[in-house]
Length: 113
Length: 113
Image 1 (tube, each protein chain N blue to C red):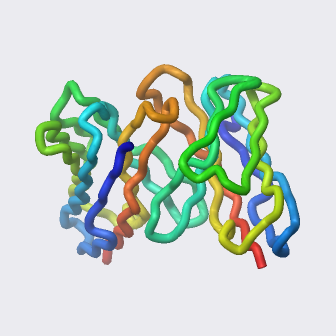
Image 2 (cartoon, one colour):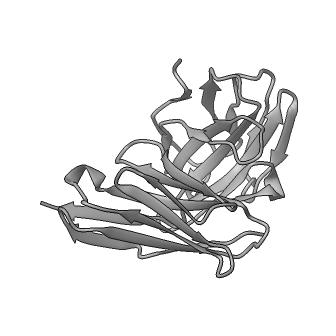
């Protein structure tokens, strides 16, 4: 049981490039989400999904796309990277039961030049 | 929507002393309040949580208290040890985005030996 895994651990992009951050969980959790972490701002929700085929926007969705074709995977796509997207990105998953524990992945550190 | 404020932003204590971190929230409908510990280079890890039907919860050296009337909750760490040094985040569950966690900005705890 690996929990929540993320790849890559670190990535450098040039402005305008696109890339996909991978997230996978093996706990059969319905709910998956992406957060970004910036200094002094805690973690902010980008997108979330309540099950395969269902995604929705969080509080800071601009510049990011997601899809959920399987229960296990929830990739985050940066369409055209901007320096403002330099951040640490965390994927999390949980059971859909209200108030259930959220499990976080180890994070992807992204630098956009 | 929910807003969570966390204080202090940094906290230094001597090994063996107690540490207290406080959070306030804005949405009276919130009823689940987890605390996460984040070590350098890792994702947040749940250390304790509290639900609105209780006022206090303890787990060995860690305790959390909740005052729903005043809309604040606190993390108490007793007999601090160097391995307690980390960033601590409080959060409140908001039903605005499914199981969305609204995080505080974090507290850097340093335990000096």
